[in-house]
Image (cartoon, rainbow, N blue to C red; front, side, top):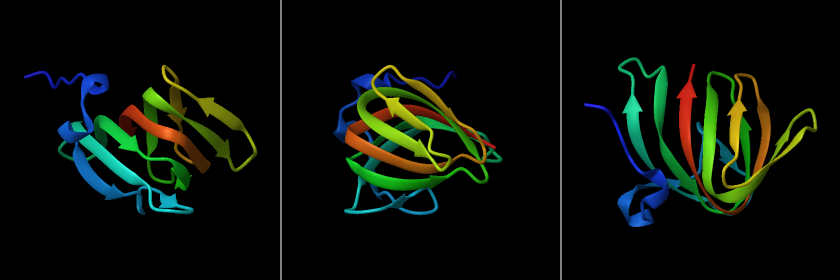
Length: 120
């Protein structure tokens, strides 16, 4: 069977409440940031995971020490600031790769929904 979803059409009630954003994923730097998601596929060894993820507004700290992530943003917006000062504005339709070793902050301005692939 081919894993399949129409992530942009899912209602928040169709995806799982994953609780507030917290480590080991990322650290919220202010008020709690609610997250929801749905895993579409994961390899048996956990080396690759893909699905959809949604997060409420706020600022958070991300460190891609062990993995990298590919995202395609469906809705919402955020500003990503890498530790070297590089700023990336992310809006609906943006496709971004956070390579292994990327570290910095994400400031989500309005609830963000993305399709993601995490890989080691």
